[in-house]
Length: 321
Image (cartoon, rainbow, N blue to C red):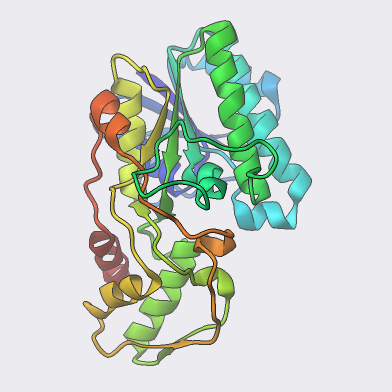
C-alpha cells in the first residue's frame, strides 16, 4: 500500500513505523515540521500539508499514488480550549476534506481516529454491560460535554455519511484514554498525571495533585499509543468492515488509586498529596464510567486485541530517559 498518515503526533508516527517496517510506502503529512524521532527519513517521507487546504491535500494524494489514508490529525482538548474556532475547523472541516479527497481520488480505505469521549454523556443512564459502539444518546440532554467530543462525534457522522452516500470505505476507531508511551509528550490527561507521578517517584518527592482534571471518581479505561497504531494497521488490513465504528481499548478499567498503585510497583515509596476532592468522572466529565467499552467488534472484524496493559505503559514510560 501507499499510505498517507495525516498528523505527525505519537499515534501517527507509531503507525508509520509499523507500516514502513513491513515495506509499505508511507507519507506522513502535518501542518508543522515533524521530528521523526526514532524513525529515519529513509523509512518514510514527511511532508508539510494543512488538511484545511483541500487542493493541496488532493495534489499530495494524487502525486503520491495514495491508496489508503490513516487520519489522525486533530486538535486535542487542551488546544481546542485555547483556540475553539481552529479546533472545530481542523477536526470537522479537516476531516471532511480528507473524506472528499478520498472520494475524488478513489482511495481504497480511510481509517479515522476518534475517541470514546463521544459517548461519555451516556454514562449516567448506561447499565453495567460493556459500552457498545452503537450506544444510545439523547440528542439534547446527552449532547457532548466538551468541544473536543463534539467535533469527534460530528466527524464520525460525516464519515458515516460519506460511506452511505458516496461509498467511501471508512473505519472509525474510538480510542480509549491514550497513554503516549513517550516521556517527551505529556499533553493528554493520563500522560500529564503519569508525568507528575513518575517524576515524583524518580526524585523521591511527593506528587502533589492540584489539578481536578487529573483526578477522577470511579474507574476509567486507557489504551497505549502503540496499541492505537496496531489498531490502525489492523483496520487498514481488515477484509470486511460491517460495524464501521470500533472501540479500541483492552476491556480493563482503573481507579485513580489503581493508577498510583501501578506506579508504586516501580517506585514503592511514592507518596501522593491529593489537594482536590473530585466526584465526577474522568477529565472532568460529569458522570462516572459505568463499565469498560466493549471490544467485541474490534476483535471480530479487525482481528485486534490490545497487547499492552497499563502496567506495560507505565513501565515503558519509567524506562525512558
